Length: 106
Image (cartoon, rainbow, N blue to C red; front, side, top):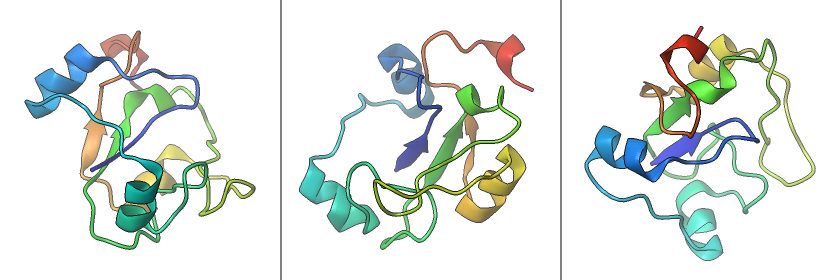
């Protein structure tokens, strides 16, 4: 799975396990390329090599515009959260980062 969060957000292991029922594990750099087709630093939730479930974290909803990577470490695209949701074909919005409570969701 691929979870997209705000750049300043940190994963909350307790929330992740509560949401998915298992402990989170970061992939190694070669595994990231193998699964996504993008190198670390340029992973984006669209144009993926494999069909991977994409989840969007509510930590991004506080921004009017977001700038996800676009396949390389020196590229980005400007999107709204609605556009990101559409283009990523995300499974759902989730809350798995630290300090992002219900009232932060918009």
